[in-house]
Length: 111
Image (cartoon, rainbow, N blue to C red; front, side, top):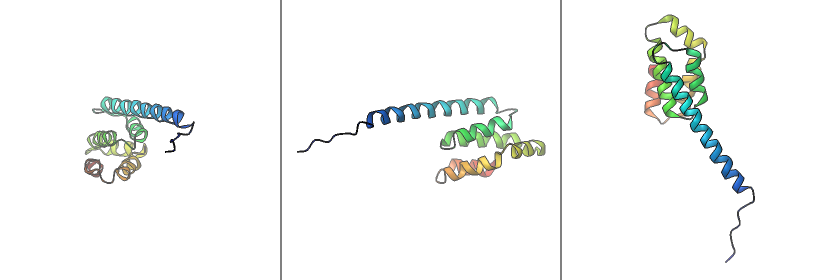
């Protein structure tokens, strides 16, 4: 039977994928750390940056949306600051990226 030969570029691509995955995990960990620091009196720009950095990670999206919800609940000044930082768009982007994730959808509706 003929032998299957992998293209020469397959090994570097696999290494690139592993490096990208590792970088992605670091980004997730960094975003979660930023969100944890901003739970009480958050910086809207940092929160939105964390959401934008990890759109494809549902944990980051749920956590970030929860931080936004808690930050703006009943506070017009905070609501305006989050909106000015791009928070509304970031929540919508996260919800669109996780259409089938009920946790993201529920938190996005309450943010």
